[in-house]
Image (cartoon, rainbow, N blue to C red; front, top):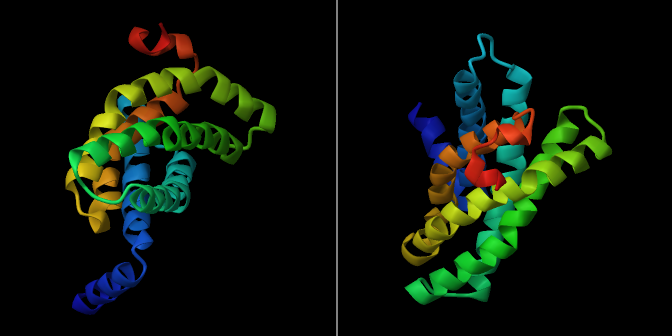
Length: 185
């Protein structure tokens, strides 16, 4: 067992993106399980869980890692002013792109077509973005202002665990009119 842990540590040190990929490959499917439990499902949809794991581990973690590297290169440093700038830039660049990809790709992974994926983005993007704007800038300021760069993806993955439960909820909401009122007004 000690040998396995040592190998994992070597890999994550040599390839830092793998830390986020491992974390997201655990937290995203877990968020789907929690959302399904909250939904009252008596039997889990394991294909849904697998889609969340694949999307989190192989799409979100690498793109987030890339974004953090670019943001750190564009705005080096960890003071509060730089953290706020990074949070604003992230809110208007990475966040909308990530949410669009989430709805679009997850709908395609479900076997739905391009039209269904476009409709999903059209219906759910704005309410989800409203929630994101109220939460993520604060998290981003903490991440860029106080967390060492090597731990930023892991920190964000821990914070995003609750967010991914919310995304799972929004993704499987049959009618956007059933979303909380503050999101749809």
